[in-house]
Length: 136
Image (cartoon, rainbow, N blue to C red; front, side):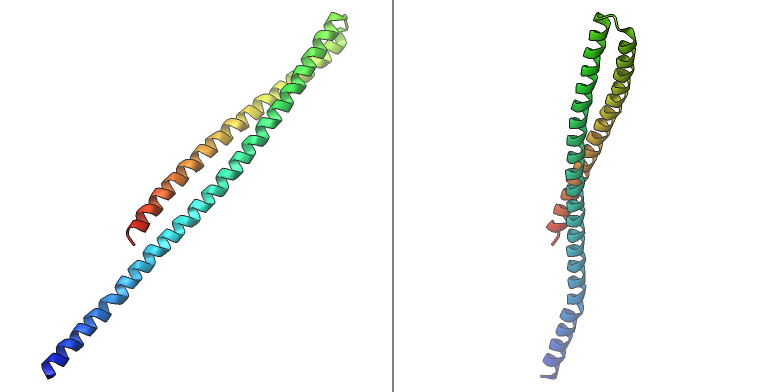
């Protein structure tokens, strides 16, 4: 009888002794998954922000192109009427608008690159999260 009680006590200690370790490992895995979820949400915010910036830059580009084209038409009209002083003024304005257009195009390229990086980060984070969740 004493032998059976001793074996039961040892089995209980082994079970209780290994259980906290398993619980700690599982809680670490859950924390990793939660961390991955936070990173995914951050990436989603970055993507939304990049899309908003891209849309704003595209509308700005269209406005600048319209201004440039209007200045070009005014310049051509001034040349037709022989008003070279006004044509020079519109030419200078048109050149300035072209510089702004080029800067906006560069912003659009940078926004597209940021968007691509954020999407790649999100894909990586989702794969990592799924791998970590599969271990649970």
